[in-house]
Length: 361
Ligand code: COI
Image 1 (spheres, rainbow, N blue to C red):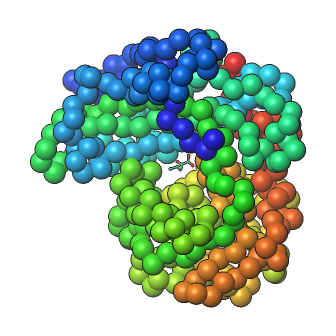
Image 2: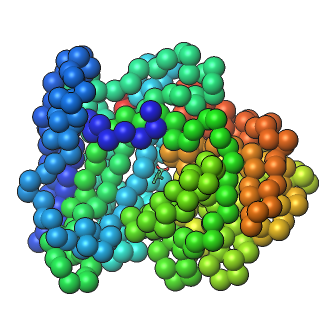
């Protein structure tokens, strides 16, 4: 299924005005999930479209004209023992706060963010809109598992001049999601495009960053790859990120390397979790610059990480026509172990010893 724009009925929105946030939950048009499942495709599409329309929002705004917006992505995951739990929502809350500050917007209090994420999932679940745990998911390492994708994002007030937003809205929508990447292709292509520049917005989860990602990713897909990988803007030499995820290399020496954080790298929550899990597994883990030449020579395994990506193995990387194949083109043992550990904690098949999961229902 991947991402689908089938937003669940309950949406949260808050607006900053007169120095304070006011908020509301909106119930968009819907039937029961069973009634919706029985509808014709065209009727269902109309209903789903109507849930994505808000007549009282400005069309011309700093968000629609100049991409001035930031967002988050979290998942509420069906638990083996029943119910739903969200993975590390406090980390998304603080990153959203920093993103808004980075875009010079009044930042959204972390407690409001947490409440909105938890409450939208709860209210949608009460209406029957949530996926149920399926024991078959474990068979393919949760590749095809469903979850609720929680997407908080900002929208600016109306405006046409190039400007900053002082009265933003924050929305939180829920939509069903399953595996983000296809499972039949794990090849990646190094892009000549530049995702982020020093002193720019690469460290912010800014909507505008994803324009370059979409262009580079579509070029990679058109050339037969699953994913694209960006190099740094200054030297065109050091690895930065995948299209919309962080990236890791497991080297022949046994060292796990991911590019160090800076103003061009998104501080991923899955990234931080993988670093912690690798430490626990006594793997030498480094956050440092890693050049494309080092990767082509020394990498044994590679995977990309993110909320949507989880930890998705990359089995080859092509750079200017030269292809490095990792682990003979098979998913490596380390990548599979990290992927399964993260998924196990998220879906409740492994113990949550770190208190990463927030139970919602
Ligand atoms: C996520 O992993 O949730 C992200 O935000 C990336 C998304 C743009 C696919």
